[in-house]
Image 1 (cartoon, rainbow, N blue to C red):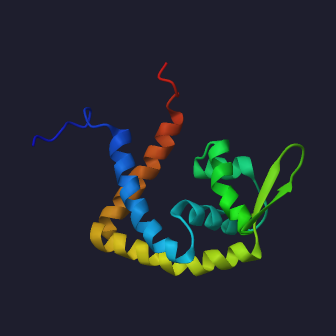
Image 2: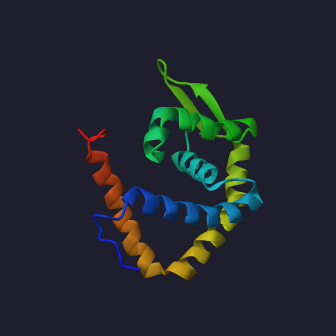
Length: 149
């Protein structure tokens, strides 16, 4: 089978397949702690912040549309892992609860097992290079006008 040129290979499709396969690995490990990869990422971000965070900032950091962020946060709210509070003006804040801190801490070894399994198979050096490229890609795509025109 001939290899497609970079110009002919769909970046979105290729990245989506890669993301889905890596997410399945992490989801399988994090399920032992009752979380998905997305939920764990949100809890870690909130824990790193250490104080209530405006939803708009969390959405920007995690590259979520507002409605998608609300859907992702709802199960965490139901389980009382996060709490919402009013902020200045119309701002809504979200924070990790003590229960959320414990769940994130319980999930950390499962995340680490997924990380170790991924790095063992993919390679630490290969991942370091790709991680740098992906970070550059995220920044570059933020500069591209949406809608094509």
